[in-house]
View 1 (cartoon, rainbow, N blue to C red):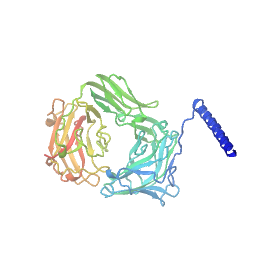
View 2 (view 1 turned 180 degrees about the horizontal axis):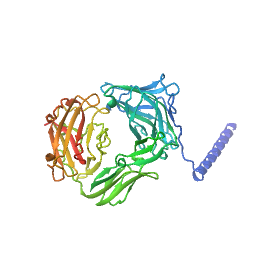
View 3 (view 1 turned 45 degrees about the vertical axis):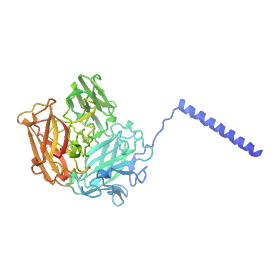
Length: 488
């Protein structure tokens, strides 16, 4: 009997505890709701990873050429303390991968970074090289709020670097603490080492003159067509750093709110894609919080989109860089934004997320690159992706639609370079003159089929690294589609 009484007593006590807890929970939810919070730790790496597991570094995909063996901790070099992160950048022809890069991931629930305004770190290099990309907001699974800075200039002494945060209020549960990608494009193929120390999020309070940007801060006027889409490109965030210098970082469109002046003409997706739904004129603007963005897009829409001819060649005989008709090889970029180039458009490396996203009459997608302010630009297949073997191909095909009057002196020079990133091994060009550029179809497209033998000097087709479009400012605005090599 004692045993039975004891069991009953425990049951009553447990039931009472459950009722008390349930009552307390009900009060929290109805009267004083408490939202879940996440760690607010700003430090990422001092002498060791902070608040991260030993497996905090995740490399980019080795199948894409990423070298997974050049990352570690150096106990003999530090800006402060005893250790730093050491990154050995491989030569392009390293059999284990020709570039190095990846992310630092918080493998827990993520961090609340709303109390900070910048990612900062100290770095130095074995030489004055460029780090291709640094930033935060990507953990290889989610990148909703990614921010990147391109071509970070290293010094051989320690220097502090600052990456501003466009809108910290968005970062309530961020797992992507840091990202980087580095190759040898700035060193002529020579490997080098760089070190990073005191990596953390900070609230500097000294970042000023915040200027969100779309279209690189320019006001763009563009013709459009019903059913087409235009990606809002060159999205950035420009600030004045404590040093007094201006710096612009690339920012995810998710930081921005987009506004259309006439939703009957153009509507905008959350991803920053303008969809043309009716005839007329609309102006697209943006903002981050209460800060209006520099730059705008004015679109005047009329009629259906004038598509390029649909390629009909057998895919087995094609190596495609950019076409909806074929599977495309991986590219580093559709616009490298090199020094000296004024060319806009072609941002990124995704053939399904370019400047103009139209439709064919059957509703299937038609992606178009729109190069504006053209002087020279390249489609690159090097460094972060394998060089392309076109040794079995005989011709280059490209469709071009010049969006302005072609004068007699106008031209576009097509150039092929092999060995890019490891040292150019061959280079050849072919000039498309004004007569050829005026030989257009009913939709305004000229379809070019150029024998590779016409690219005098191009002798290493097994290692294609870049295809250039050069106008030397004679032609500023072109559409490009169906860029591929084929065997005939």
